[in-house]
Image (cartoon, rainbow over all chains, first blue to last red; front, side, top):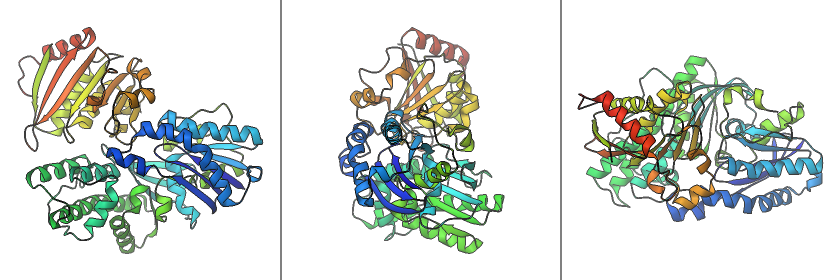
Length: 340
Length: 163
């Protein structure tokens, strides 16, 4: 099936054309980073209006790059939630309109489900697997038994890993987005230089907490101001990255042992982080577990990732109805009940 | 203006204060949280939600990226974080006012970014650093609904100087 996928759940307007949930013909992400950089953060007010401005050009470009026309599209997959209703509505309304006008089915997909299955666009992963989603808004562990069958094993009780990166970078006086800069500087620093906490490491659960780590960075910088560039900054970045990776690796290992699952998928924006990628590779080698981490272009928010589940649902007659609406909150564990 | 000034010596105490206050809140209550990064705002909110919407307490997390988390319950809690926003224009465009005057409890982190849009009846909870662990937490009330809540909190806590 030739699927047009559309994503507008947060800060990116994205569209893609994917064949059979496997082959990416095009994937367009209208990255708004240049606009956001002015504000030291992502300004969703701009994002919301931007989605509306960008949605048509992004879809047109996706079709054009794929060298197909709207008449060739057989189904539409779109992010239905979770996210801000205003942002979601832009993509969701576009998907509904295209489906109605072209008389083709559409399906609303969970944004995190898209991330969990993004790896399939490179190489299918056998079920069951453990999924670690790390991004600006998520740090979640899922047991994945099939498309649509997800069990949440653990999640952050405060900041997401990506948020800890962004906020810590800002505390260190670095520009947005912080994760990539911290990752880069960490490469030239000593990870043992600054003692930072590993929150909830030994609490016996699969919960995460990164708020205290960010606060520890704040307190360290208040006592030992860092200049940029400096060896002290590199050391702080390396120590911070080590703390985040320690916690993610420790809890992931615990989840692998708890579930007995032999395959791990790491995805979401923070999965681009080179420190995390090599740490997870090390862990999986030690445990003899298969590891899949999508290429960086599929880790951040994109539309192509929605086509994996989208194609599966549409091919199995699970299309959404035109009366369906977006949902700001959507529990991954009961995804199928709310699909249509 | 009625007010309460407290010292919290740990995240647990901050969460406990949130839960004490949560027991007194009513549909329509509005909590404006203020203070620097690491002050304890999300932690405090976890306490509030454990009292107002206990069945959703496990869902509490920082809404910095999402801007708003919605904890469903008989009285839902709308947990906002305006860290990434610049002011009233952003907030108005996102259509949040309908939640401010709805049937749930609103908890707003980085409420400093609210100007004209701040509901006239609200509780302000301000977090200040004392040292690495201790925070001063100041609660003040504006408007009759919030003044009643803070008086109840003062009555319940009378005799206690610390958390």
